[in-house]
Image 1 (cartoon, helix red, strand yellow):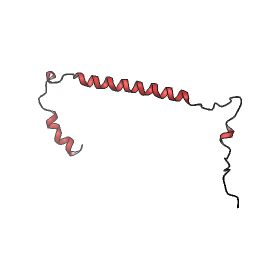
Image 2 (cartoon, rainbow, N blue to C red; image 1 turned 135 degrees about the horizontal axis):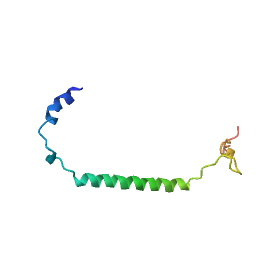
Image 3 (tube, rainbow, N blue to C red; image 1 turned 90 degrees about the horizontal axis):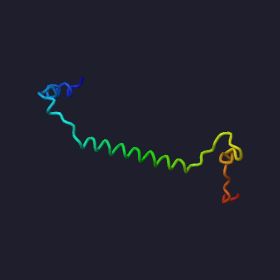
Image 4 (spheres, one colour; image 1 turned 45 degrees about the vertical axis):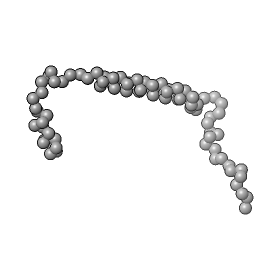
Length: 79
């Protein structure tokens, strides 16, 4: 163990009774807020991903190769 941990052990082993430890309602409120925020972010991500058009393998029509073709610059100056 490191020195600060060993030095703090006598402080942690002080006289604490179970009556001294009580649940605090604001920790539960913070936890609940974080759960609501994660659910909101998940729903927002799901909504945004529905807007994206992912190419599907084996889909009829365009195979997606048009995106792989090199794009020619029409405004390139000719020597």
